[in-house]
Length: 632
Image (cartoon, rainbow, N blue to C red; front, top):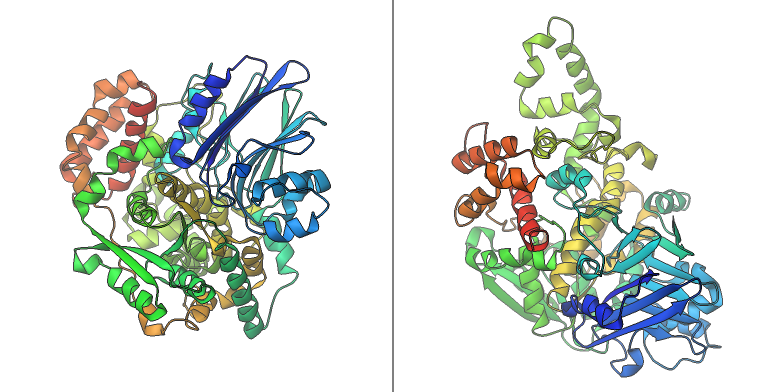
């Protein structure tokens, strides 16, 4: 729902300019738009604007910016407070004028102050101006479902749901933050608090930013690590009890997310997470839930038939769209417009297509995001568990290969790949982030040297010991919750769905469900080599096991085929020595040579070009973004 933007500045920004900033996000909220400017003590001006996608209270009473009755508080807000009805009962002494959750934010702040955030259960990005304290707060939900950028420079602040409004702000000049580039090439996304532009940041998930008299301060009101360790003191040791509690909370979560004054449906891939969410939604609904799936004409990749079988079993109103490679390829050029900083997770294309399909029928769609991170679903968790068991042996091999007289023989480089990975995994702060071969080195080498005194971000996250967890699987899950989930998965879904003015809601990322998952022992999530054990067990209460239990064979974007086929000429132009030298971002000689080798050999070629389509795609997407936003 919606997009917000605004500023706190001593410079005079007109309402017309503010509206122009706001309208760069028209796709996020085509139903309504509001922009207002307020005077603040000390010569400051506050501008608030919002594009609205109407979900609750479709009348003009839901228009934003919204104010308290005495106009002490002004708010612009993007998202949903799912427990707003319960909060409204606690706030009965406030004179509500609307039926929307935005007004609940105002009433809650007036009663509890900024501590009201701890009572909110939802997805949100909020900007709130308190005239009494002369403070402006920027707030992001616990897991980072909704985006919130800010530009802070010379004591002045500009904020927005996307980068486009900031780029449109008078006085802003986009300069690339080169410290993030190597990490972006490797990870394929840019995680909070960094962004692609200098002096532009993302409010972190679960964080508050306070602006007062030209200064800012930030703090977390909810933190993954703290929430995990707090929950560990209240572990649910009995499996039956854990299953019942989780099932009850999932039902409550889905039911809350079905509150809407517009048509609602559910994404259905046929996998465990989306199938479970859909099953519960169907149980809560008086009529068949509308469900949506993407299918592929290539039979070996097509999972639509599994989604259809689940839909038939549940009795949903199912719609599927069959697409081919060419359908996906048509969306490539739109990536930089809607992902307005470099973002190279190619699954964004299929997500855009299923969002487009759903938007033809509904305005809100439920999704199964979060199940893999919170319940141990990714294949990497299998590898991480095995690597921990072999770590001591790997250390011995590494030590032997580096003994005097043996080191010169480069013995470690001759080891089989899997052995080499375990032996070389010696960095204690990134123990669970192995298996990348020489990708980190290539990502670093592609970017030109930074000026003296500046240091690039490490391509891996060197933060693992901070979680205080010995089990590598749990540690990697917590790391993914802090990085990959908000920075990649939720960013992907937000931009893809909002491209079509569709709101995506994630029941598994409910506050109570997330915190319950932390109380459930890990042995109930990863049991005897079975990932997501407890979540699968709940799914079997609704759907026969034979409809769900199968190898995952999802269709991947054929990057190598595209980059060396229809995108070959464009990639060659982007990687030419002359272009790169003039651009001044990458090491022109190194990149032109390596990309040239890749174009000739591809993923199936010799060692000089093998398996580099992923990092080349990251490079290609960056250059696409650069042409869209920097060259113009």
